[in-house]
Structure formats: structure tokens, C-alpha cells
Length: 187
Image 1 (spheres, rainbow, N blue to C red):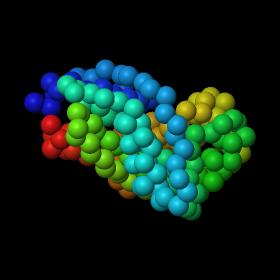
Image 2: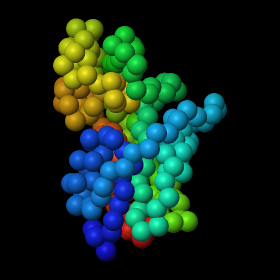
Image 3: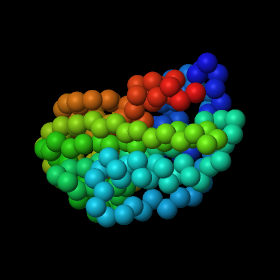
């Protein structure tokens, strides 16, 4: 049964850990350093899967299912990763202001020789924000570990995001609805 299956979550993201707990899954966290670069010419869905698969290749698990994931934000064809500093976060959030953007999460499942990847995409619509609001957000919520420089579960999601078309949990970093179905097929 899925709820008793031992799982390794290969992610330091507190949001992904929280989501797996809310799913009622039996998991432990293991981390390995992986280069998250990717070749040019990939579209956002391909990038999220490529990096998720790179993370998965660092693991060998026979008795547990390993879950890896990578989330990226794309606006007008530009990939917004994690910000390197406050100025970079300001630039990203300014691009998201008044925009429609997409959040892609690639997920890879591995157990022994079984290897399976999928992705989900969610459209996010943000209202226009000014530079004072952007600075408030960065100073108070420190979004440096988040793709696109924001968390949908915090102030930005509660005050700036006007509409989401697709999975809310995908924007948090793990499409739990799809993950649960895929895990059921995988075991």
C-alpha cells in the first residue's frame, strides 16, 4: 500500500517536506549535491525534468522509492531560477508584477532499475505591485531559496497572486495530486 511504502525525499525544501507529510506518506529526507545546470535549447518542462532526473541519478535505492523534483518559473519565455541577491530578487519580482507566468515542476521517481519522470504546469496571474511592496516582501520573507523569488504560500501568494489555473501545490514545489496518482502506478 502506498501509505506504508518507504520513500526518500531528495529535497531540502521545507515546502516539499510539508506537502509529503500532508499526503500521509512515510518518508525520510536525504540530500546529495547535484549540479543544476542544463543544456541550452530546452523548454521549461524539459528543464524541470532534466534537473529532476540529474538529482535522481545521484541515488541508488533498492527498497525505497526516491522522489526528486525541480521547480522553475517562466515568464515571457524567460526562466527565473532562485535569486542570487536582493537586486536579482527585485528584478524577478518586477517581471512578475502584472504578469501571467507559468510554474513547472519536474518530478522523478526511482526504485532499483525503475525510473519514471513527469511534470506539471500551473499558470499564475499576479496583480501589479510597486517597488515598495517588492522591497517589503524581500525584506520580510527572504525568498532567496525560491524559484521566481516568491512563495505562493506566503505574503506574495496571499496579496499579489490573483488567480491560479492548475495545481496550487505545484506552485509550492510538488504537484501532490499528480504525484499521488503516479506513485500508485509506480509501486
